[in-house]
Image 1: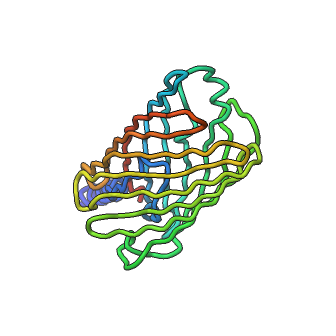
Image 2 (image 1 turned 90 degrees about the vertical axis):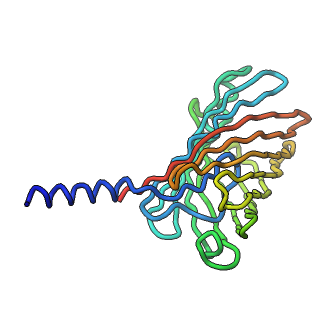
Image 3 (image 1 turned 180 degrees about the horizontal axis):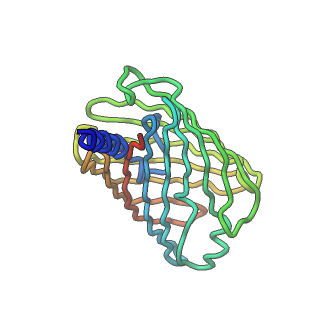
Length: 247
């Protein structure tokens, strides 16, 4: 009897630790939504595993984002999706320009993304870190996000200002548009404009789809076309988001 009770408790603990949580993939985007990971839940976003085609050659760009919800309405984020690349011309020099980010994100107003009414509002802030081989010091990032979901459509507006690692001001502004959340496979799109002090402006557009194959697992794929400094950038992306409750 005691052993059976111990086994039942052990199984209950294992189920609680590994309980699936809904995966709302925000891959394959560069921007985000006004929601956070559930409390005591880890969200692992693998990707986008992108291939970028440039006039000077092609580059593979793998990456990941790790999210954790320590308390209600708060999320800790380690963003490494711009921290790695393989191939292409002068790859070592390009790596010195790559960043990773350590951020904290908070929901300022609960709205339709949290099961309430009206827009969801969030802010995200933190440090921009150098990637090895390191070059330059740390930077800082601050973003505000507004999201609204309807039965047939969801829109997420982003406005971000950065202090780059080379001490320049940069900004990003844009939007994510999603199809019906009830669909197993929903179409998605993203548009943003990014600029940096004493540098050229980037205009980017993305179209793709997110497939929620299980409540805790979603896959995504997209194609991105951007213009930067009179160069056209073509990128193919694929990735996944997996949510896991740790206790």
